[in-house]
Length: 92
View 1 (tube, one colour):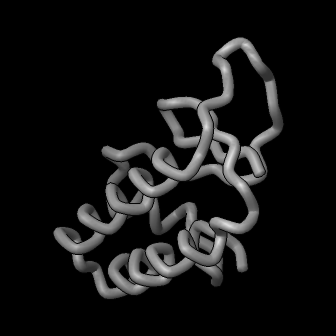
View 2 (cartoon, one colour):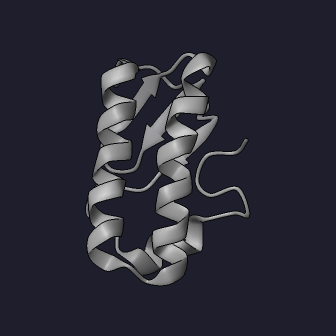
């Protein structure tokens, strides 16, 4: 799966990592719903760091369709809330 982090670029991520990312996504969803700004910020950075760690960067000159779009590290709680679905940022 190709994942885009807004403002940074894309990484290729094995589908096998989705379960691990969903754990952080579930925490992030709960923090956004409760309005926990400090917790949200920590978890968002942990989620993005994990995507960067597990993924392989896609070259900037490659145009791959993104299967998943994640917010930038400096996104606000309100911006992330607008991006959420019932499953959070990561389906499944």
